[in-house]
Image 1 (tube, rainbow, N blue to C red):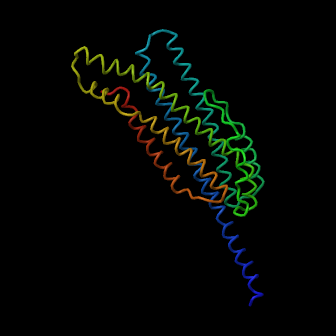
Image 2 (cartoon, helix red, strand yellow):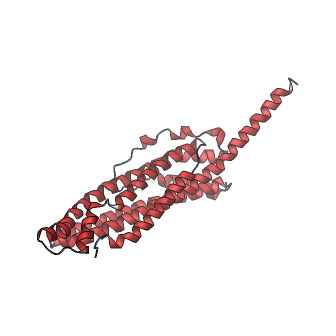
Length: 286
């Protein structure tokens, strides 16, 4: 009986190891699904932010000095913003492809096509776009993450991939957060100017000139008081981006689940849809 105990212990250890290892593909697959949802959502947020910025800038222009310098300055600023967000969108596409290939690997596709694609994507993630105005994110901030990969919780193929991509993916997710923060600051500054001009023209002047104040004035006054929904959406996306960074670290460790984060992205997508429906009526209330 005593001689059989070591054998039983070995058997139990093997069963537990197999059970832990079996969790890894589902976790990696869960992260891959969440990652694709994450990149799609961020692209929608960026698109909404650009459309909203174009909308309120177009509404601001008639109240600025009508000369070539004004038009040229505002046009160039918006062109640069569009180029920045296009570079960001392309980088998000690279991240989405990475998560798609990681999903294939997690499902058991260990072919050379998948591993080759993952290597190319990791190389691309190492070359973050030089987006003007965004603080350069030091790679030292994510140094050493490969050491977090729990080797005993991962299959050989997944473990190898996570070690290779631990830092590049973390760096990309951190850069996304910085891009969102810069957008919040940029839009806040420009909207503050637009709100000041709109308040002067649509609220203050009609009020002090003792003009008849109808629905247009009331809506303009109420709009001035309410918080700008664009900033709310960007703040939500930034918070979700921070959560995504933690989710990546958790997966390296073979921990965590993604139901909450997927729910956050679902809600953020719903908020974007609702904001898009409101958007046409927010700039020139009748």
